[in-house]
Amino acid sequence: MNLIELIVWDFDGVINNAVQDGEFIWGKKFEQDWGYSLKEFESFVFSGDFNDVLIGKTSLTSLVENWAKNVSFEGSVPDILKYWHQNDTSYVSEILEIIETVNRLGIRQVVATNTDIERTKFIKHHLHELRGVNEIYSSGLLKVAKPESAFFEILQRLEKKNPSEILFIDDSEKNIMGARNVGWNAIIFKPDSAQFIKDILLKNTLNHGGILISENNQ
Image (cartoon, rainbow, N blue to C red):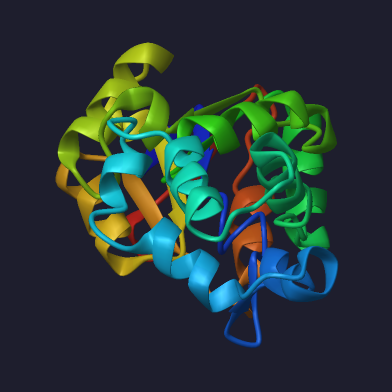
């Protein structure tokens, strides 16, 4: 049994349902609102090695600027990014409720996500909407992405926790394995597993703080 003192939540796919019906929700009204092809926009932004954007080597702004020049866009690139970020959020209410409940128990919670620096700033600015989340760690800030071991090791060092004290919840098998490889406890998240995760967290909470997790729960 491990005593959990830190819960690390994935963002997209767990807290935030950014993909619905196989489409990114932010782009559903892009053509209607801006009058440009979404397919062409995405080809400019996501072509090449988008991983460089995720780990902070290249800015998302520069990619959008390339698109803007190609289509003779007369609007504001910052406005496009603001539109993207504002329409990229659809929080999962069941998960928010769990986060709030765990917060009342006094257990620290953070977000670990693969996203660029500019979106990270947007999420951090709206962190008050995630009542109970204390911090966000992103690939853009840490300069390395999940499932690389370095991502988890840097986060662990910044949080000053031992591997056995951390519980990680993510919807990617690769990320789960990456966390387990550095000694973290980890649970795979699936669309219908909110109640399962709630039961694990709340039924194993100790009166003096912390959550006891066994290998059978993972």
